[in-house]
Image (tube, rainbow, N blue to C red; front, side):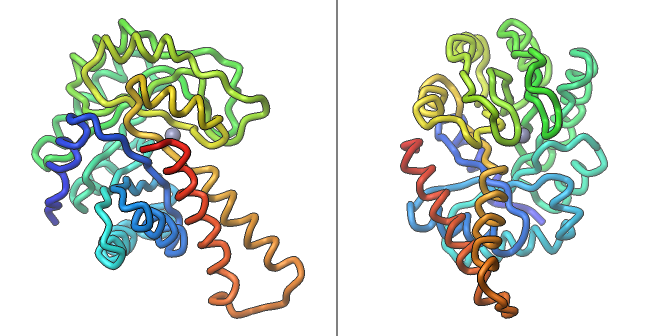
Length: 274
Ligand SMILES: [Zn+2]
Protein backbone atom coordinates (compact mmCIF):
# COMPACT_ATOMS: atom_id res chain seq x y z
CA UNK A 1 0.00 0.00 0.00
CA UNK A 2 1.78 3.08 -1.21
CA UNK A 3 0.94 6.41 0.32
CA UNK A 4 1.05 9.45 -1.87
CA UNK A 5 1.39 11.56 1.22
CA UNK A 6 4.92 10.52 2.16
CA UNK A 7 6.78 12.91 -0.07
CA UNK A 8 4.41 15.59 1.11
CA UNK A 9 5.32 15.08 4.74
CA UNK A 10 9.06 15.28 4.12
CA UNK A 11 8.64 18.38 1.99
CA UNK A 12 6.35 19.98 4.54
CA UNK A 13 8.88 19.35 7.29
CA UNK A 14 11.72 20.67 5.16
CA UNK A 15 9.75 23.81 4.45
CA UNK A 16 9.37 24.37 8.18
CA UNK A 17 5.70 23.45 8.54
CA UNK A 18 4.60 22.78 12.13
CA UNK A 19 2.38 19.86 13.07
CA UNK A 20 0.24 18.81 15.94
CA UNK A 21 0.69 15.04 16.27
CA UNK A 22 -2.20 13.41 18.07
CA UNK A 23 -2.41 9.84 19.34
CA UNK A 24 -5.65 8.01 18.67
CA UNK A 25 -6.93 4.98 20.49
CA UNK A 26 -10.24 4.05 18.94
CA UNK A 27 -12.82 5.21 16.41
CA UNK A 28 -14.07 8.07 18.57
CA UNK A 29 -10.68 9.64 19.33
CA UNK A 30 -9.74 9.32 15.65
CA UNK A 31 -12.97 11.09 14.64
CA UNK A 32 -12.41 13.76 17.28
CA UNK A 33 -8.89 14.57 16.05
CA UNK A 34 -9.88 14.73 12.39
CA UNK A 35 -12.95 16.80 13.16
CA UNK A 36 -10.72 19.36 14.91
CA UNK A 37 -8.29 19.43 11.98
CA UNK A 38 -11.22 19.86 9.57
CA UNK A 39 -12.68 22.72 11.60
CA UNK A 40 -9.31 24.50 11.69
CA UNK A 41 -8.48 23.52 8.09
CA UNK A 42 -5.10 22.16 9.22
CA UNK A 43 -2.99 19.18 8.27
CA UNK A 44 -2.37 16.83 11.17
CA UNK A 45 -0.26 13.84 12.12
CA UNK A 46 -2.18 10.83 13.45
CA UNK A 47 -0.06 8.54 15.56
CA UNK A 48 -0.28 5.20 17.28
CA UNK A 49 1.93 3.42 19.76
CA UNK A 50 2.51 -0.31 19.82
CA UNK A 51 -0.21 -0.69 22.50
CA UNK A 52 -2.76 1.14 20.37
CA UNK A 53 -1.84 -1.03 17.39
CA UNK A 54 -2.25 -4.15 19.51
CA UNK A 55 -5.60 -2.83 20.75
CA UNK A 56 -7.08 -2.01 17.34
CA UNK A 57 -5.14 -4.32 15.04
CA UNK A 58 -2.66 -2.82 12.59
CA UNK A 59 -4.59 -3.07 9.34
CA UNK A 60 -7.99 -2.22 10.82
CA UNK A 61 -6.45 0.89 12.43
CA UNK A 62 -4.67 1.96 9.24
CA UNK A 63 -7.74 1.40 7.08
CA UNK A 64 -9.93 3.22 9.58
CA UNK A 65 -7.51 6.17 9.65
CA UNK A 66 -7.42 6.30 5.84
CA UNK A 67 -11.19 6.05 5.43
CA UNK A 68 -11.79 8.61 8.15
CA UNK A 69 -9.35 11.17 6.79
CA UNK A 70 -11.15 10.93 3.43
CA UNK A 71 -14.45 11.27 5.23
CA UNK A 72 -13.35 14.48 6.95
CA UNK A 73 -11.44 15.77 3.92
CA UNK A 74 -8.33 16.38 5.99
CA UNK A 75 -4.64 16.10 5.09
CA UNK A 76 -3.45 13.60 7.67
CA UNK A 77 -0.21 11.66 7.95
CA UNK A 78 0.17 8.36 9.75
CA UNK A 79 3.06 7.99 12.19
CA UNK A 80 4.28 5.16 14.42
CA UNK A 81 5.02 6.54 17.89
CA UNK A 82 7.76 5.13 20.18
CA UNK A 83 8.54 1.84 18.46
CA UNK A 84 11.24 -0.25 20.06
CA UNK A 85 10.98 -3.20 17.73
CA UNK A 86 12.32 -3.36 14.19
CA UNK A 87 9.68 -5.96 13.41
CA UNK A 88 6.85 -3.57 14.29
CA UNK A 89 8.52 -0.84 12.24
CA UNK A 90 8.72 -3.17 9.26
CA UNK A 91 5.05 -4.08 9.56
CA UNK A 92 4.05 -0.43 9.75
CA UNK A 93 6.18 0.46 6.72
CA UNK A 94 4.52 -2.37 4.83
CA UNK A 95 1.14 -1.02 5.91
CA UNK A 96 2.01 2.34 4.34
CA UNK A 97 2.88 4.56 7.32
CA UNK A 98 4.19 7.98 6.30
CA UNK A 99 6.60 8.08 9.20
CA UNK A 100 8.00 5.84 11.95
CA UNK A 101 9.76 6.51 15.23
CA UNK A 102 12.53 4.31 16.56
CA UNK A 103 12.89 4.91 20.26
CA UNK A 104 16.32 3.72 21.34
CA UNK A 105 16.89 6.70 23.60
CA UNK A 106 17.54 4.56 26.65
CA UNK A 107 20.30 2.66 24.88
CA UNK A 108 23.92 3.86 24.76
CA UNK A 109 24.64 6.49 22.08
CA UNK A 110 26.36 4.09 19.66
CA UNK A 111 23.50 1.58 19.80
CA UNK A 112 20.96 4.36 19.35
CA UNK A 113 22.90 5.49 16.25
CA UNK A 114 23.15 1.95 14.86
CA UNK A 115 19.45 1.16 15.35
CA UNK A 116 18.33 4.49 13.95
CA UNK A 117 20.59 3.95 10.91
CA UNK A 118 18.95 0.58 10.31
CA UNK A 119 15.50 2.12 10.44
CA UNK A 120 16.48 4.94 8.07
CA UNK A 121 17.75 2.34 5.63
CA UNK A 122 14.52 0.31 5.90
CA UNK A 123 12.31 3.39 5.58
CA UNK A 124 14.16 4.82 2.61
CA UNK A 125 12.72 2.39 0.05
CA UNK A 126 9.22 3.20 1.33
CA UNK A 127 9.82 6.93 1.17
CA UNK A 128 8.83 7.16 4.84
CA UNK A 129 10.22 9.67 7.32
CA UNK A 130 12.10 8.53 10.43
CA UNK A 131 12.01 10.02 13.90
CA UNK A 132 14.56 9.08 16.56
CA UNK A 133 15.08 10.27 20.11
CA UNK A 134 18.25 11.47 21.76
CA UNK A 135 18.30 12.26 25.46
CA UNK A 136 15.86 11.18 28.09
CA UNK A 137 12.19 12.15 27.98
CA UNK A 138 10.72 10.36 31.00
CA UNK A 139 8.11 7.80 30.03
CA UNK A 140 4.91 7.18 32.00
CA UNK A 141 5.84 5.84 35.41
CA UNK A 142 9.49 6.85 35.09
CA UNK A 143 11.09 9.45 37.29
CA UNK A 144 11.08 12.95 35.86
CA UNK A 145 13.97 13.83 38.17
CA UNK A 146 16.60 12.06 36.10
CA UNK A 147 18.41 14.58 33.99
CA UNK A 148 19.16 13.46 30.49
CA UNK A 149 18.75 16.57 28.40
CA UNK A 150 19.81 16.33 24.76
CA UNK A 151 23.37 17.46 24.20
CA UNK A 152 23.54 19.78 21.16
CA UNK A 153 26.92 18.51 19.92
CA UNK A 154 25.79 14.89 20.28
CA UNK A 155 22.62 15.81 18.44
CA UNK A 156 24.64 17.20 15.53
CA UNK A 157 26.69 14.00 15.26
CA UNK A 158 23.60 11.82 15.73
CA UNK A 159 21.67 13.51 12.92
CA UNK A 160 24.69 13.43 10.61
CA UNK A 161 25.38 9.75 11.22
CA UNK A 162 21.79 8.52 11.02
CA UNK A 163 20.16 10.64 8.32
CA UNK A 164 16.88 10.90 10.26
CA UNK A 165 14.19 13.43 9.37
CA UNK A 166 12.87 14.16 12.85
CA UNK A 167 14.66 14.32 16.18
CA UNK A 168 12.82 14.06 19.50
CA UNK A 169 14.68 16.17 22.02
CA UNK A 170 14.80 16.15 25.80
CA UNK A 171 14.57 19.75 26.95
CA UNK A 172 12.52 19.39 30.13
CA UNK A 173 9.27 17.77 29.03
CA UNK A 174 8.00 14.38 30.25
CA UNK A 175 5.25 11.97 29.30
CA UNK A 176 2.03 12.10 31.32
CA UNK A 177 0.89 15.00 33.45
CA UNK A 178 3.23 17.24 35.43
CA UNK A 179 3.31 17.52 39.21
CA UNK A 180 5.02 20.88 38.92
CA UNK A 181 4.88 23.15 35.88
CA UNK A 182 7.74 22.23 33.55
CA UNK A 183 10.37 24.67 32.51
CA UNK A 184 11.56 24.02 28.98
CA UNK A 185 15.22 24.73 28.31
CA UNK A 186 14.69 27.04 25.32
CA UNK A 187 18.36 28.05 25.11
CA UNK A 188 19.35 24.42 24.71
CA UNK A 189 16.65 24.01 22.08
CA UNK A 190 18.03 26.97 20.13
CA UNK A 191 21.51 25.47 20.20
CA UNK A 192 20.25 22.07 19.07
CA UNK A 193 18.25 23.74 16.30
CA UNK A 194 21.33 25.58 15.07
CA UNK A 195 23.47 22.44 15.25
CA UNK A 196 21.09 20.17 13.32
CA UNK A 197 19.18 20.38 10.10
CA UNK A 198 16.17 18.27 11.04
CA UNK A 199 12.68 18.90 12.31
CA UNK A 200 12.66 18.76 16.11
CA UNK A 201 9.94 17.00 18.08
CA UNK A 202 8.54 17.74 21.51
CA UNK A 203 7.16 14.76 23.38
CA UNK A 204 5.05 15.11 26.51
CA UNK A 205 3.34 18.38 25.66
CA UNK A 206 0.27 17.61 27.80
CA UNK A 207 0.17 20.20 30.54
CA UNK A 208 2.96 22.46 29.28
CA UNK A 209 1.80 26.10 29.41
CA UNK A 210 0.91 27.46 25.98
CA UNK A 211 3.46 30.28 26.16
CA UNK A 212 6.28 27.76 26.58
CA UNK A 213 4.96 25.63 23.74
CA UNK A 214 4.85 28.68 21.48
CA UNK A 215 8.43 29.53 22.42
CA UNK A 216 9.46 25.98 21.61
CA UNK A 217 7.75 26.22 18.22
CA UNK A 218 9.51 29.49 17.49
CA UNK A 219 12.84 27.81 18.21
CA UNK A 220 12.79 24.71 16.04
CA UNK A 221 10.06 22.39 17.33
CA UNK A 222 7.98 21.32 14.31
CA UNK A 223 6.06 18.38 15.73
CA UNK A 224 4.21 18.64 19.01
CA UNK A 225 3.00 15.33 20.38
CA UNK A 226 -0.25 15.19 22.27
CA UNK A 227 -1.45 11.97 23.86
CA UNK A 228 -2.16 12.05 27.59
CA UNK A 229 -4.55 15.01 27.42
CA UNK A 230 -6.57 13.27 24.69
CA UNK A 231 -7.03 10.08 26.71
CA UNK A 232 -7.70 12.02 29.84
CA UNK A 233 -10.26 14.38 28.33
CA UNK A 234 -12.13 11.51 26.71
CA UNK A 235 -12.32 9.38 29.85
CA UNK A 236 -13.07 12.23 32.28
CA UNK A 237 -15.96 13.38 30.10
CA UNK A 238 -17.28 9.84 29.86
CA UNK A 239 -17.05 9.32 33.63
CA UNK A 240 -18.82 12.60 34.28
CA UNK A 241 -21.54 11.73 31.81
CA UNK A 242 -22.13 8.30 33.35
CA UNK A 243 -22.02 9.44 36.96
CA UNK A 244 -25.67 10.48 36.91
CA UNK A 245 -26.93 8.29 34.13
CA UNK A 246 -27.75 4.67 33.49
CA UNK A 247 -27.70 5.14 29.75
CA UNK A 248 -26.64 1.95 28.02
CA UNK A 249 -26.72 3.26 24.47
CA UNK A 250 -23.09 4.05 23.84
CA UNK A 251 -24.08 6.22 20.87
CA UNK A 252 -25.70 8.58 23.33
CA UNK A 253 -22.73 8.92 25.70
CA UNK A 254 -19.67 8.69 23.43
CA UNK A 255 -20.46 11.83 21.41
CA UNK A 256 -19.94 14.06 24.46
CA UNK A 257 -16.49 12.55 25.06
CA UNK A 258 -15.65 12.81 21.39
CA UNK A 259 -16.74 16.45 21.28
CA UNK A 260 -14.61 17.21 24.35
CA UNK A 261 -11.53 15.88 22.55
CA UNK A 262 -12.37 17.91 19.43
CA UNK A 263 -12.69 21.03 21.61
CA UNK A 264 -9.34 20.25 23.26
CA UNK A 265 -7.53 19.97 19.93
CA UNK A 266 -9.22 23.03 18.40
CA UNK A 267 -8.06 24.92 21.49
CA UNK A 268 -4.51 23.57 21.07
CA UNK A 269 -4.37 24.74 17.46
CA UNK A 270 -5.46 28.20 18.59
CA UNK A 271 -3.10 28.33 21.58
CA UNK A 272 -0.11 27.18 19.57
CA UNK A 273 -0.90 29.41 16.62
CA UNK A 274 0.11 26.71 14.15
ZN1 LIG B 1 6.41 10.38 23.35
